[in-house]
Length: 398
Image (tube, rainbow, N blue to C red; front, side, top):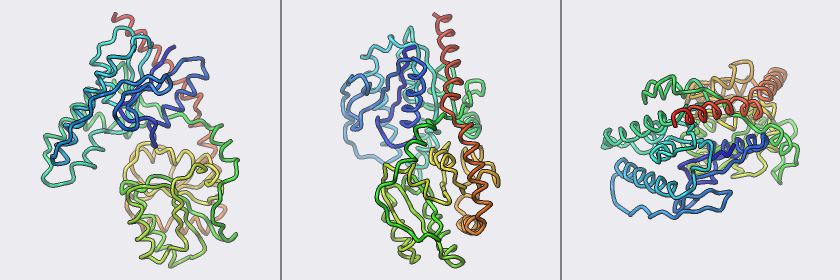
């Protein structure tokens, strides 16, 4: 099959959508399929097929002064139309299947009314929910502007043969909030290239500051933004220090909240125990050195960081949010704590800090779960029948 993985977002980029596209391409190519990747370039000025050196320029969005909720509507409407016009200039009829990675790309491709390729969509997160959290926090924001995204998400979610989501949590959001019909949605969890991760994990980490042998190591990996809840981790560590001081914590990643989080660390007098390591290319190796992985996130779908921690044999403490409870069996492969509750987080950290046998047992069970559940080969086996069904239906309709 000739397959196009298409997204409205810029490629390449840090984040789950790009990782999913790369790993899906690898799995499909291993089965003998030809796979291309389409999206905006990193400057959002061209629509590209990144592995074919195809680049269609767009007309840049004109600068305008508007409130954030109005601006994001006008920007999205403009950019999505430019994306659609650029896609129309590409030979998309050559593909058997176009697998859109978001509702904006799905709607644009559906608008083209292509004759041959069938369309399938994967939704990695609710566009309406994310836009609301980013652009509609001001009391003066107009809810009618948010309805633009709700309508867009509905149209894009209903556009293809089926729409794939990673878990029941996301399915419920799309059914209950966006009113996408239940029969349109297929729940398939992500696959992950386990062999590649384990190979990278076996390599030595780049230079890092050594810790004392007796010290336990907590680790967080991810963006440093408010939605990741790292502020609650730092507060939890301040509580933990009152009971036990024999630990260090590595915070790996970067983002707009870094300075605020560093100030919070200093305010709690934790600068010698919390280390900000920035962006790293050796995360799999660093995870091997840790004793416990913490994800205090406030909003999440199916975080890659949890999969990596499980494959590293780590006990995990994560927030009771999004699709996380479907990834972690509480008390068996990790612990789930209430969202934003630093005291409960500190309690679980203190427990696992002292109970070495429990911590190691949980890590072992997490690894066993991960190696079977996140298999990329199994994920490809589940998605390929959907491709064939979509193509068959398209041919029948033609």
